[in-house]
Image 1 (cartoon, rainbow, N blue to C red):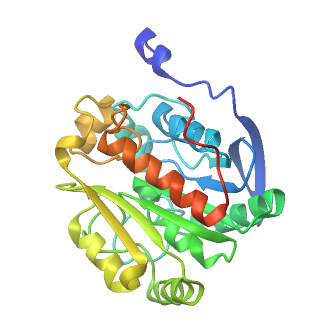
Image 2: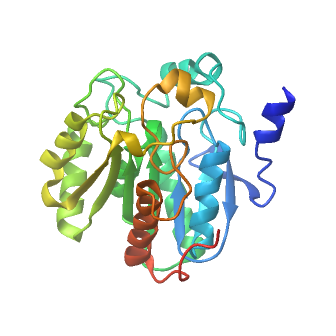
Length: 279
């Protein structure tokens, strides 16, 4: 590890490290904060410092955050070589069905169990689920768990080989649409225009499934951070990660407004939060 990389890695020292077992499978989960539960899923290539920053903002807004380790090195700064050490491995994993025709990723069943556990621990009207990139759509399929009442789908990239695909099988898609309709849920979603990993075709497919319950918001590509970490600069190669790697931490910026809209959405569905976000 280089000195520069070590300086940018995040030790995650302000998170409680828990090994949580669901249906016989144990995973490391980083937990922080008090209040209603929010399950925040990492983007590729893992729980980066930017993902941890968003978790802290969520904590400071009045929520208890559950951040599961699903791939990569926890806290690592996203470097380009992660495409070999993390991305390719995840793409062939049986837990993640990264390509069209695979149906719903099996790891979502574990995430629903985590949401049930979090709701039992925190109480309140339900749980928020925030997906990012590789896990973006997981927030929607997690809504098959009744405890999940606030799904946020950020720049979902799966399936990688079908720009209009939804990364769920037909049965799950129908069940999700029925749950959203029956319980009056709204699905909040974000992407950048010209994102080649999460295209307008994908958002159109969500709207076709969910109708007006899908609130898909598109930011201009020029609003993205022009100097993201190497993985996003060299591998992703376009404006993609709205509230993490491509966020510009400046008051009034479109990506900061997106962050605040997400926190307000969680507050509306899960209960009151603190006034503003402590920075």
